[in-house]
Length: 102
Image 1 (cartoon, helix red, strand yellow):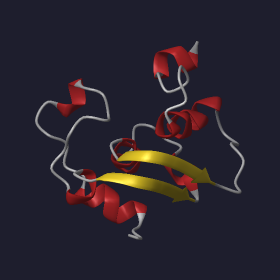
Image 2 (cartoon, helix red, strand yellow; image 1 turned 60 degrees about the horizontal axis):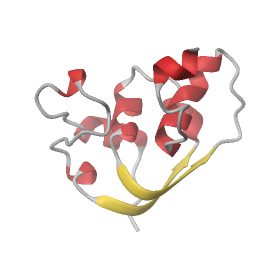
Image 3 (cartoon, helix red, strand yellow; image 1 turned 120 degrees about the vertical axis):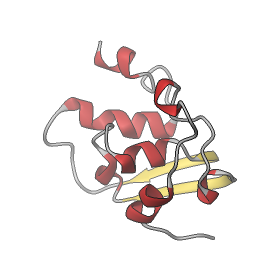
Image 4 (cartoon, helix red, strand yellow; image 1 turned 135 degrees about the vertical axis):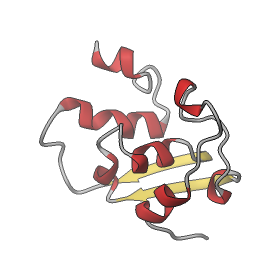
């Protein structure tokens, strides 16, 4: 079991060259991202509600067999704040931002 914070995850996230042009689930150089985890649980998952932040990008780049999100905070600002959670959970077709915004 590994416990970490969103800040640590974001600070160690180093997308490989050209990753901005690829999807978020591409390889990167961070140790936490080089492992295929059995299960990842995001507590306070509303923290990654902005898909453009380094924290969200780092979370979306994680690889796992099972993914859970836990939050007690409702989405209050925009419906787009729900997208990173759908993308992390890999709920197709809601994990594609262009489809999600349609």
